[in-house]
Amino acid sequence: MKTKYVHNAFCRRWMLVLLVCCVTTVLPGEVPVSEKILHQLQSAGHARRTLLKEREEWAAEKQRLELLVSTVQQRSARYRKKTEENQKRIAEYGKKDRELADLRDRHQAVSEVIDQMAAWLKKQLDEMDTESIPGLVAPATEKADDPAGRLSSGVIRLTRSIERGRDSAIELVSGFIGEKEITVNLVRAGGVAAWWVSLDWNKAGVARVEDGRLILEPAAGFVEAGEIKKALEILKKRRSPELLILPAASGDKK
Image (cartoon, rainbow, N blue to C red; front, side, top):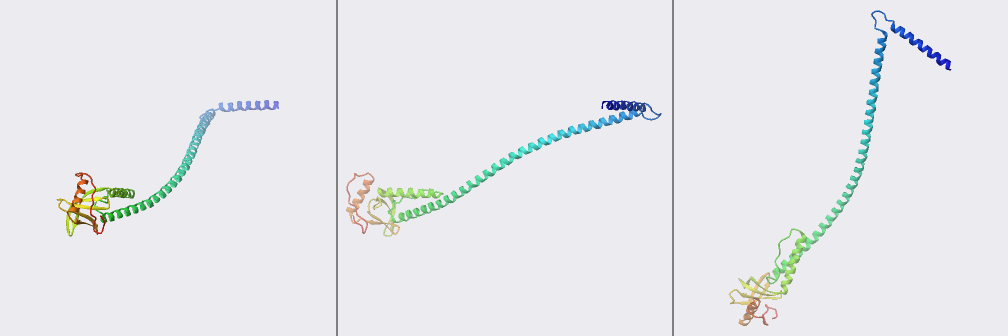
């Protein structure tokens, strides 16, 4: 085995010697073979360097693309996660929106009921106002824009009317003696009865409501008229309180 290896080495040396002899033997006018071989070797070296540079560039480009793919995959994973989170939020918002819509429907139904109650209460108070002694039913307050406000105003008006029905008061109103309309001081004893005294204090009598009109009935005599005037003076705190017997309207007891 060793002998064969030595023989091969010896043969290669002789071939190299022969090649050198051939290279050094140059015919006139020809390019030396050595220059040709050198040029080929230079070209091969340049090609190898170019190929090596291309491989390095391709390796760098591959590394860059792999990094880019990795970055895109990471971002894609984050975007998928955010998309899932947003879809969950959208589902939650949809559920809340349905709940709000249900609450709006309920609120609308309750508002309609409250509005009906407010309208009914206002109608009852207005009818009571036309059938009662002037000043007994409190006037309507400012009109509210929402059903709850209208009902609240009606309740306040009803409460004030109840309070007026418990107290005595003096009202300046217009009434009719026959077909003649005059302005008088009205002495109201809550919502039970009322009496009147003319502004010149010459006339007095009992007041009642009939068909939405305030009817002024003159007193039967000077005594009854005097008692009514005393009541007005007591309410105006011009006279000390005392027990008085006042007349009643037609058909009523004193």
